[in-house]
Every structure is written in structure tokens, then in C-alpha cells.
Amino acid sequence: MVVKLRRPILVGGLALSFSLWILQSWHDSIVQLGEFSLLSILAVSGGLSLWKRKHHQHDDMTDVLPSDRSWVENAIAKAEVSINYLNQEAGNDIDASYIASLKQQIPLLYTELDRQSINLAVTGGKSVGKTTLIQVLSSSQWQPEADKLVIFQETNPLFMEASERSDAAILEDTNFTDAVLFLTSGDLTDTEYQTLQQLKALQQRLILIFSKQDQYLPEERASILQSLQQRMSCVIFGTTTSPSPVKVRKHINDGSIQEWLEQPEPDVQQLTQQLGEIIVNRGQQLVWATTMRKAVALHNQTKDCLNGIRRARSLPIIEQYQWIAAAAAFANPIPVLDMVATAAISGQMVVDLGGVYQEKFSLDQAKTVAGEMGSLMLKLGLVELSTKAITTILKTNAITFVAGGLVEGLGAAYLTRLAGLSLLEYFQQQEIPVEAKEGLNIEKLRQVLESVFQKNQQVGLMQGFVKQGVKRLLPESTDGELIALEKAMG
Image 1: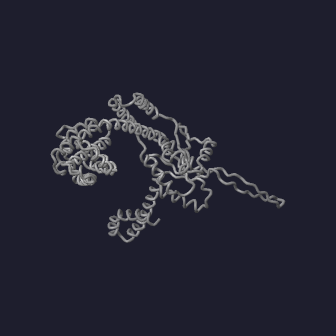
Image 2: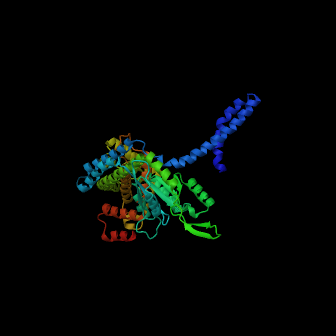
Image 3: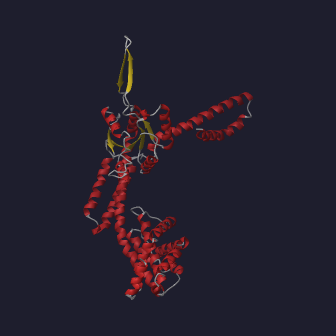
């Protein structure tokens, strides 16, 4: 608590230091009054800071809610554009019925914007009170004072080792609900905390409910609620949906005593009151946010499908140029370092791949891109690492290793392939349609290049690539030589 109060006091003191300097020139009585006022101001400012922090925990739900309907309409329009691109480019590579099913979702999303119900997912581990909470709210016929009907959707229990469905699949069910009521019967476990972070990362609106709080002593209950508030910046409530019976004792006038058990009413008043206010004040925004998530998911689904088609069309282009580069370097061996800046990375390959991904490059622009990729490979040390890996594999067979230019040829092929695959990954991350821009983002390209290199540097992949390259560059090798090389490579 002391640490939390230190910052607002220091901030307030610094902000008022100039006022202290002015007040020093006043009369003693005024100074005394000023000092008293300053202390009051410091106390108030510290209290306001703490109040704002506490208030923020209960207002975190609205941090990323769309404030305007047009935001969601733009997201739907973006999904529709991506579907149209898929329709134009797919040809016979995809079933027409699949595209039709994507198109049918667009008008449904516009209708979704005016949905008059609020869908709340109720989730959590086993035996935390999910079913009981829904029953209590339903039996009391609770509904907020709004035009929207509240519908509860209970999920399967989370964190079950023998469950038929994974936690990821269960959480996916909550993605298209308007908010998630996450129940915990005590302080958060690490697994529960990580799950809540996953939901927040999905931009899901969270309401954390500390259920079964009647099973704890008052001081324990307060400690758990404080811990939850410190760890999570979301709406947090404590409830008792199924309170334990209370023994009641009555003294009769004749001196006898009667005892019986009474069932207390569930304690959900704070939850229903605050939940009602959220739905009344922010219900429309919650619906918009859910619709936007659906639109984004539709766009991503379409983009993944389109990227799959484009990738399938791009891989033969990469293979064509990698073996062209290999043949040129094999016939005229040159140092690999020089090769990277010249023949290994073809500007024409950049043009052809850009055409597949609707990235238009002139040949001069493509040569510039190729040069930049070659420079990146040198700076990242990829050339040296690739050459060393290829040489190590070839040394397992002396006959093939002594063939002139084989290392240079395989190196040229490998680096050309690496460049092509990196461009594919880079293009796939771009938006649809491609926005006009001056050139490639070199820093982003560097990150992609490193990632692609790591994926393709695995021993098995390298051995397979070298084996394929030897067959192409040394087609007249004897069967014995190839068999020996194949055995050496495993």
C-alpha cells in the first residue's frame, strides 16, 4: 500500500513546488494557511489517483469497444473486399460453393449490427458454480432495464485433463459472445490467470466472478478480492449463488428452544445491478465489438485461403529460379559472397512473385529489392552458415564433394530459395488489397528472413535439398555414387 501511494504524492508535490516558492513571500499567517491547503490538496490528489485506478479496473471493458458503428461497417467492407479478391484469383483452385458460403456471411454481419440480444458466455473450471449462477439469474427472471434480451451460454469445464475438448476449443466458443463471465472459487491459479490473459488478448470483454465467497471468512474473502483486483484490470464481483444453510434458534416462552435450518437467498445483487448497468449503457457497443470480431475472423479466413492459393502458385516460380541460379554458379564457379550480390537472387524472380501477390515491381525496383535481400543475408551471416552446412553434408561423400562448383551451385540454389520463401512470407503479411507504398519495409523483411532461415536450416531439410540438388547438377553421377551419398545423408 505504501508503494502505491508514493507515486501520487510525489507527482502532486512536484506539481505544487512552484506554488510553495510563491507562498514563501507571503505573510506568515497566509503561509500557514497555504501549507494547510497544500497538505489538503496532496491528500485529495492522492485519493483521486487511487480512485481513478480503482475506477479504471471497472471501466477496462470499454477500453477497446468501438465507439461508432462505422468502425464495424469498415471491418465488414474489408472482409467483403478480401472475398472479392479470392473470387477473382481462385479460378478452379477452389470450390465455388466455398466462396458462395463466404459471401453469404456479409449480409448476416450487417444484420448482426442491430441484434437485440446480449450473449454472455459463462466459463471456468469444474465445480465453480457456472450452472448454479445461470439457474439463479434465470429463476429470478433477471433482465436489465433495456431492450436487449440476455442469453447465457455455459461452456464445458476448463482445465480438465480427460476432457473430450481442449481448452483452446472451449475458449474459441466464447470468441463470438458479447462478454465472458469467468468464475473462480478462490484466488487465481496460474492456469486461470494465463487463460484470462488469452481472453484479453482476443479483445474479449471479461467479467471476473469470485463465486462461493461464503465459504471463506470475511477477512479471507476481502484478501482474495483485493488480490484479484491487483492482478486483473477487469470488472470483478463476489457472489454467493448457493449459500450454506444457516441454523436458526428460537427461545420459546416455556423455556424450550426450537432449532431449524434456513436457506439464505443467493447473494447476486451487486452482480445483477452492475451487469444491468453495463448492458444498458454499453450493450450496443458490446454487440458492435462482437460483430467486428466476426468480420475480422471472416477476413482472416479469406486471406489465409487466398494466401494458400498464391503460395501454391509461387513455389514453382521459386524452384525454377533456384535451379537456374544453381546451374549458372555450377558452370562458372564464383565465390559465394560475390554470388549473393549478383546471380543468386534474381530480380526477375522478385517481379514474378510480386505479380502473384499483387505487388507490382518494375525490373529496376526488383533488382533493388534483390540487392537489399543479398545485403541482409550477408549482415545476418546466413551466407556463411548455409555454405558451411552444405559443405559439411557434401564431405560425407568424397566423389561428389570434389565436383567443381558443386558447393557454389547448391549455395546459389539455397540462397535463392531462401529469398523467395522470405518474400512469400512478407507478402502474405500484407493487407488486401495492397496499399500503395514506396518500397519494402527492410526491418520487417529482416525479421522474416531470419525466421524463414531458422525454419529451413533443419538438418533433415538441408540434407533433402542437397540430395535433390546433386541429382540436378550431376545427372551423370553413377548409381553407386548417388546411393553412397544417400546412405551418408541417412
